[in-house]
Image (cartoon, rainbow, N blue to C red; front, side, top):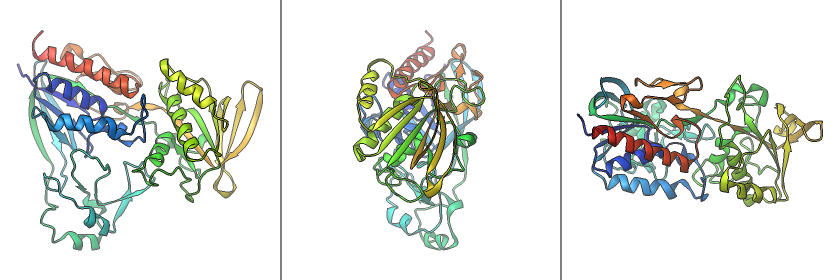
Length: 411
């Protein structure tokens, strides 16, 4: 029986599960498909409950990982095969080439001289990135990544003499033996391009809530200034469209739990940067569970924030790159046609496995959330199970880690 534990996913839930299991004396293999750990939390400007920056919580977790030799981090890696059974699994992991050395080398200057550019995945397309890049200022592992497909011909000349870059590095596979598995594959924002009636993808200055989070981040594409993507101008009027694609049988047939709180947080961002910006929130229902009701009361007291109960029917392009929306005011029984400098779609949380396959023997419900698997020694955590905030995700991960530990100990 193997004493080791596999954790799939290096977001906040995966980090928590890995640390908890390792600190109980077990070898942990942490497999993350992106170049760095941190998941969606790393993309945020601030997160609940303390409204602190992601570095506040993530750097503590990274320090615990650095100090624990039992945690083995595999980034740019994916599980591609599984055999065996509970207590003795053989896992095949495919690792993509990073093309940079295994130790930390600062390529900042070289990266700045390169010409090739592609949309930044980390900034959700709001900015570009070079072929040689490190998206997070506090990234772990603190290593650059080289993307050969983004290199221009002149870039190839610039890096030709760099002995620390290895363009010949190839994809490889390794095998791991583990006794139990924690799945913490997290979530992704719902694809807004499917919300064509709300302007996503074809109306300028109509963005998602996660894109606004990147604009508000001091490490984002605008160094923390919330501006219109088209002209860099501070918006004087902003509309939030709640439940954009959520609670809708054609899209996400459930409430994502945190979208209302995210919008309240964004209202605070806007009020801090420009108290004169007029903000309107179109909602069906407002959710502020538990102690978060105080945040709702704080935002409702702001003189520049207005709440309208009613659905937004559509959003279209207006003059001066403004967005025109048609909505209802359910309380007054009125139909509204209004224009805004910026419209933010509060899209829901979709489990990553809703559109991705994972070669593990676990069932998923109609929405892509994991159900069951515990009889096989496989435990799901965080938003792989249901929409959760950071605090509840960490609690879920701790529970999953303890179950995984009990499994390898044969209890």
